[in-house]
Image (cartoon, rainbow, N blue to C red; front, side, top):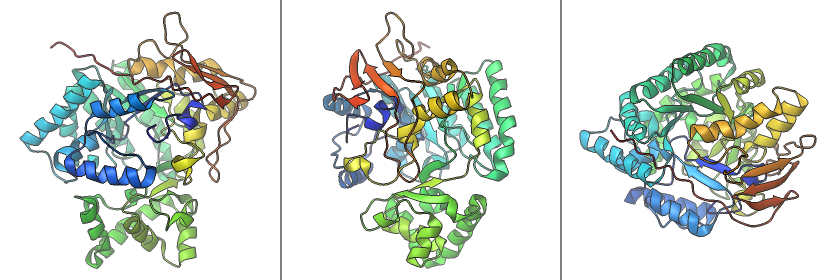
Length: 465
């Protein structure tokens, strides 16, 4: 929204409030080293100058810029860990743990909704369960949320769900399982045990929800196919290991295991790169790109990560349609996009991102509610609005009621549908005729009015102990 405050792809699909900061990553807090690295990246890719290091400065910048929709955020555990002691694969010292706790308190006092983890990414993957429990106790003191991209969404999914539940139980914190999914066919049969476990702990009194988007492909960094020990330390140290011929065999062996899970590199597509030099690869599968360049897939992945300084995103077709339908129908699963606020023009219109950033909500209402009758419209709308609003303590939002903020979407159920697809993702859906944020019309007859009535929503709810 600092690149384009109109929040085009979100507001045009009916999103009036965005909850950001998921998967362990936020643009705050920043150490001096992190500040310089982020500043370089955002200036090169988006033309945005970073002039903050903490959450307060980030909020101030958003408010000064103006935004089309309401914005709330978690604070990323990976960002906090990185700010305190970088990307090191070790437990924090007592001093470092206290520094991380202090940063969490500062973020919660300033209005963060809670803490997110990305336990599949560096540096979050280096954290032991005990570390996260300790940090979540700080969050619990503010009645905050613990949202987790779990440690594993494939072979060790069940164990990862248990870890998330244990953290929430020990810290006495409300749990949000981010974008619940089962990756790769060999794990699809685990769904019943996962959903049953979520229902069980909820019946025992745990505050727990999960969220999911209505697609059968994931989107994440290409480096998830690279061993975590390679990615320790600074970006330069990581890329040096990736270039080291002595380590090539060991890295290649790890990537081969990932290929076996995927089944075929035809199922993994390059969606975003940093430089213009490799822009011609965007939208192509790893298999196709490797053939065109004349490299084996492993060499393509390695060399692309090196050339793009690790800033490569992918789309991975690894999910089950039937599983999605069972997940989204569960009463404790809400609908979330796991996407960005993009636009078909300017810096945000490059690349070929996951279509969820444009199509999540019209796709759910058009394809799955109207056409396939997966659930009644009222249930789907509740999963898009009031359930999430209550979970995150967004008072006065998520329902149309007297005394509430006028965040209202007017749509045509007979006409609503997503148009974004895998080959042409930068397409707005249709059928959302009006979107009103804080009483002002942002979308009128499916066109953006240009007004920016959104607010930064802050949670300040300290428990007196």
